[in-house]
Image 1 (tube, rainbow, N blue to C red):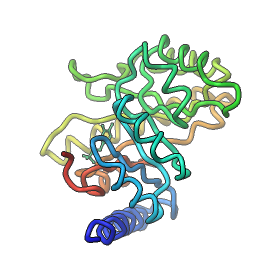
Image 2 (cartoon, rainbow, N blue to C red):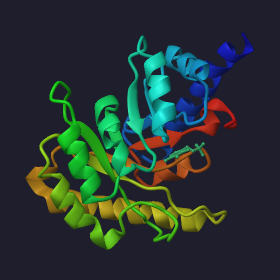
Image 3 (tube, helix red, strand yellow):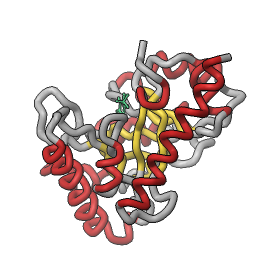
Length: 234
Ligand SMILES: *Cc1c(COP(=O)(O)O)cnc(C)c1O
């Protein structure tokens, strides 16, 4: 019972913070949407959050996600794939998700496009950018972003929605802000570059539990929040 009480409270708290940041940083009301990052969280917790009004969830690991999706078919959840996309897993991802936020190369984009079922609308994708050029991190390097973007917009079964990044982990707030600003600048550059081809390009996905208010300040339209919404991962 305690758990059922807790889900709405944490959700209300996060939604209130998002709304407050929209006001504080002169962002339009409701211009920032919330993705609940539910990796390694239980099906019960996801269901409770859904029943409390949260509609979009992000998962990182395909097998874990498929189990959850199967057991939550009675909930009208919009599923986002936010983890590393392995080539041999693209078909299931194209079949079961509404969004993939972590596209970072042409092969992955092409496979998702070709494998998206005709019965479904085009797959929404964000291109993941390795904004701080970390060797261990996925995401396209900034100088390779425009060619990848140009390629993705030619794929009819993809709807190119925007950019996603996970900045360098740091305790220095200024560094964090610079990463978010750099991504926002790239986003504006992409938007201008695409012109008419970018009519659906409206998403800047950045900010997690520790830094989402900062991300909203710097222009995020989508924040992906896990631990602050669910509690610690098991
Ligand atoms: C886990 C994860 C998050 C959420 O992280 P928290 O710090 O728990 O909020 C957001 N984005 C991605 C891509 C993740 O893997």
